[in-house]
Image (tube, rainbow, N blue to C red; front, side, top):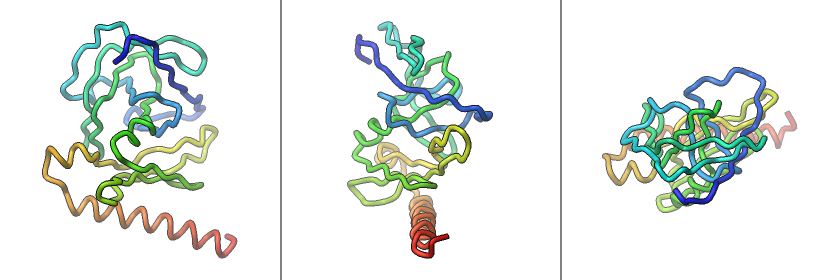
Length: 174
């Protein structure tokens, strides 16, 4: 963390957001969560770092760790207790040598080194219109743990099915 204040934007959503929901955010400077129990190797942040929400509210970063769940592994996640949403920084994902692609109903994350689709998500059709990440296996995890080829294959098939259906819908005008 740097000593300067980092700014992230948090969209207002009128619908209930499950605590395990992770949104892809192109305005976020880094990954943030309000659920410390999801972080492993969690260490206190003592340099006074904070973030500013879209409405200007300053929120302190108290810890940093890695997110590990049955569907995700994300390094360098900051814990901000005051937040109401979990945000994954598109920029920070891109810094891991990944491409993030969006269309009107879905998104995917591709490892630029291998070409493998390592993450998929969908767009919420409510007032927020935010993209929710469904699965992600980070490139960093593959280097430190045995890579699950079955997971990569199913992610790729799911992404190709989603984008094929989108292209088909566009070409038939439905």
